Image (cartoon, rainbow, N blue to C red; front, side, top):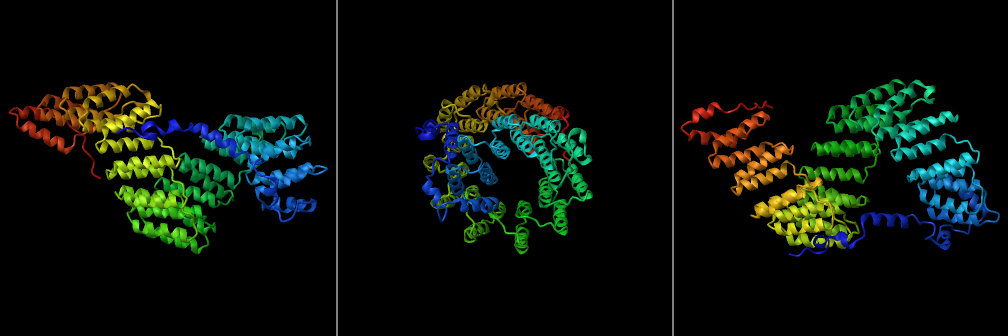
Amino acid sequence: MALKSSFRSSSFSRNPSMKDNISSFLIHSHNFTTSTSKKELSCSFKNSLDQASLAKFLKENCRSGKFTLNEALYCFDYMIDSQPISPISSFNILFGALAKKKHYYDVISLYNRLNSTGLSLDFGSLKIFINCLCNIKRVFEAHAVFGKILKQGFSPDAVTFTSLIKGLCVERKIMESMELFDKMAVVGCRPDVITCNILIDGLCKAGRINVALKFHEEMTKGNEESGVFCKPDVVTYTTIIDGLCKAGLVKKARELYLEMKGLGISPNEVTYTTLIHCLFSLGDWENGKSLFIAMMDQGVQPSVVTFNVIIDQLCKKGQLDEANKLLEMMIQIGVDPNVYTYKILINGYCLVGRIGDARELFDSIARKGYGLDVVCYNTLINWYCKNKMANKALILYREMISKGIRSNVITYNTLLGGLFLRAEVKHAWKLVDEMQLNGVLPNPRTYSIFIDGLCKNGCALEAVEMVNTIVTNKFALSLESMNSLIDGLFKAGRFETAWELFQKFSQHENLMPDIVTYNILINGLCKNGELEKANELFLYMEEKGCAPDTLTFNTLMSSFLKSNEIPKVFELLHKMADRNLKPTECTMSLVMRSLLKDKKYHKYLNRLPQFPVEKPL
């Protein structure tokens, strides 16, 4: 069968590269201010804008955040076209309000338009501009604006430095952020607790947890020599506790939790949730549960995130009834569940096989006013596919498409796996074409699933053709795919093709054979009666630093026993003992039966090696 479209001639060959697509998207998605007409913008206001309504907008709407982007853009046009032009302070209020709503690209575009008018920008304007640039990872440009601040004779304050330090931390330029922090003291600018917290967060995210702990210690002691004058607050402790938890240092995290309480700093909902999640992740259910009770006793209201963490843990433990009781409790105390709460419960029901309850909850989400998304659908589709109900999975997929919910590569990978599990190869090919029509690009996992599915359904030659297409188009091929293909070729009786494929791809650095590869090859060679070649491969894999496992030894020994090559079996048994490996009971039974057939079995029994004794559970 000739490979069709993306799989048969690679979907990527007919589409721009992903990098080009992303670049194109960024260019077009950030050109906000030129794509909307003034007429469209003005319709957001009930009446034509005048100075009085502008003043009201700046004073009330901008400070409260109750405005749309279109309204802000229309105000800017009115302000810049006014005669005389509005004062810079008015523009600063507008820019600041837009920045708070994270319209960073718009602020930058408007800033450039304002700059072209010749109106002198003040310190406030430049600070807002720096903040916006740092938030979109354009720190280099932000430093240029910082230079402009110094050139114009302004003295940078803690807010300016904090924006730059935050930008450097986001870009993982931790050394530069620490150097900038040190410069604050040199120019006589005292960092505040917000600056320190941002630096600690950056250190933790960069894996510099020890440096973060030292910095925290300096804050606690008030080390003026290092330029640290402020004391840690609840955000400081929560940030570093989160960093410690993510680094697996839960003991130290709990020490800091007790320390902050000792200093009279009350942990907040985020502090408790961080520690509870960490304890659950480490399997410490009891301490996590105790901390939740302590949280409630201290009068700290758990958030929906806190409840989601605990409900998720209960679902993973299979305790769905307890999870539902907690759901009822959160509603009773006034915490509304969100769509993630229901996703967790749906997944929990699927994990224990309660698909009826999962579907009922799934259907109830829409009735409750929550929007179903692709994750909700994928959860149920995955369960149906794993349980060989691909037909029901496809019905759910069609429903999702009909509701305008965009499927993703996970959706298609799951469906393909389910179709191959039911040997519906033709339907899988059709789904690939549909995947392309919906603009979803395959990923390496897609190719692995398809190659494995073809091989397991007797289509090894089609799988070879697909691999050739992937290689020709210079896409990454996973070792998992290669292992599936080699296994499929052996099972199809294509021994020479499998061996050639192994020799060809074992030369690639990214496709170095692993224990799975060698076990497939050794098993295939043994079944084909090529014991010497299998044994040579066994020695070769050891030379290449790939240690054989119990399966490798058992496969070889079983084959040597069938051909009555007892010395070879004993050689392998001793090698196993040297590696603290133990043959399976089935293999040892075969060994003993073969030995008892030999007249000299007593001599062989004395040569049997001692294997490690498994400790009882």
